[in-house]
Amino acid sequence: MKLARIAMLICCTAAARGQTEQDLADGKATFRSNCAFCHGLVGGGGRGPALNLGRFLHGSTDQDIQSVIQGGVPGTTMPSFEFEKEELANLVAYVRSLSGERSKVKARQLGGDPITGRKIYEQNGCSTCHRIGSEGSVFGPDLTRIGAGRSTEYIRESVVNPSSDIPEDYAGVTVITEDGKHVTGVRINEDTFSVQLRDSSQNFQMFQKDEVQQVIHETKSLMPAYNSLAPQELQDLLAYLDTLRGDLNAGAEVKKEKGIR
Image (tube, rainbow, N blue to C red; front, side, top):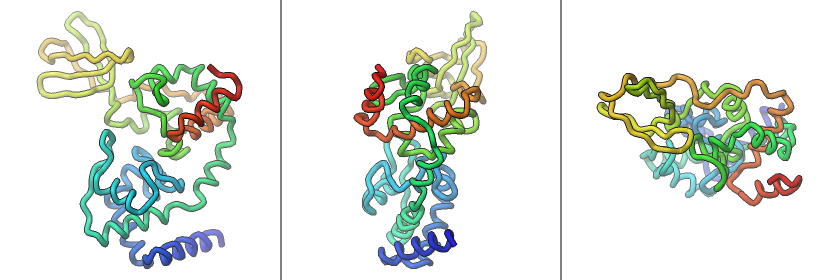
């Protein structure tokens, strides 16, 4: 019965926008061929933002969504795509159809305290690698908008098993110098003759390959796995991360409420 109501809602939404069921089916096929690898088979997110949360990072109008698809997002892994006008319209309609009750379901599933979650974030030294707004480090991914862009399931997996999906921009590399010193960091650039990395102190270093013993491409994430957190601690941390949606004032309120400095 519930599935029938959701299907009816999607069809009514499509009809209101002048889209037919066939248009949505065509949009779905385009999505699965071009977008699902990063955004998930049904828009639940992964390497790319979740698209079924009822909110979009770069604007909510059809034109906003089209602009992101056609122009990509500079500084991210989102590329630009070229589609025919009708194909693009059907894709946008399908992306919109993914949004439903997901946001409400997500809120119910979290069941944590974001204020306590903020303390857990700080106690575990997360800011030594991650940045929120202007605070923290750029060694790891920026978390300023993670609550708006990633599903709870993806964030949870990233915390307890970060090696399950390592973004290419944060792949690790270890250089063993001639004197046996190990230097590990995020690979920034590499070619036949050299490798450049950013270490945990946010220093850039470049090495000539013929002047070092070895260059090792790490297969595990440089982020440690926080799988020893108690279940409630994990829920609290996820609840805090969910508040990070680009609104830095909201984050400040979480800190202010219990005098977190």
